[in-house]
Length: 166
Image (cartoon, rainbow, N blue to C red):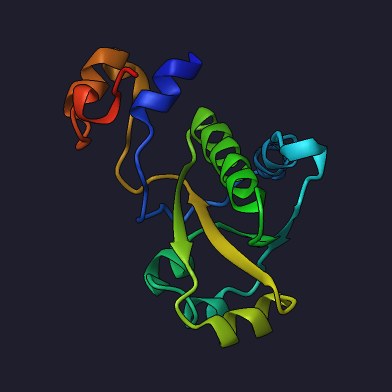
C-alpha cells in the first residue's frame, strides 16, 4: 500500500473479528515499533505483549477494546524528556505497519495507574500506552478511495486552522 494512502485511510478500529493475527504479521508490527526513530537513538521504550488481557482490561479506559483484540501491546517508557514523543513514533509505526497488513488498531490509556503498573511491571517513573490490534469487524478497503477522498471524509480540523505560516 502507498504510505500516504495508508496514513490518510487509517482510522481507529475498536471492534475486531475473531481471527488470529499470524505470527509473521505480529512480528512485522513489533519490528516497526522497534525500528522507530528516537532522540539520540536511545530507544527509551520496551514493548510488553500482553497474553492474558483480562486483568489489563480492568485497568484501561475502554475494556471491551482490549478484550476483543488479538494482539495487545503496551509501550512502556519513562515519561520524561523526549521519551513520550519517541513512544508516539513507535506507536504510529506499529499502527501503520498493521494497517498495511489489513490489521486495525487503537490506542487505549491506563485509567487505573496503580493496577496498570502492577500488571505491566512498571517502575515508579514509567507509564504506558496500550495498543490493540485485530482484523476489523467491519471490512475496510483503503484502496476504495483516493487519499484526497479519505482526507475529505476525515473528521479533522481544516488544514488552514492547523497549519499556520510564520
